[in-house]
Image: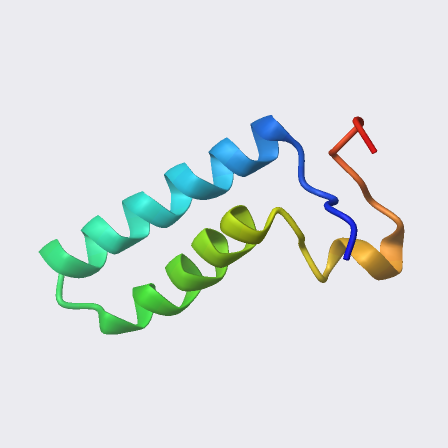
Length: 62
């Protein structure tokens, strides 16, 4: 699997995921953990499955 997420995109996904986790803890909206998990997982794997069909790559190194 080729990485298709660059450094800035990864940082944004980590930040959004962290904010959503904090919001889910402060405000009892458990469903916020679902998009948080998706954002954190795609950032950790450096691969976004939605980018593949559209040919989007923010990782310019590969």
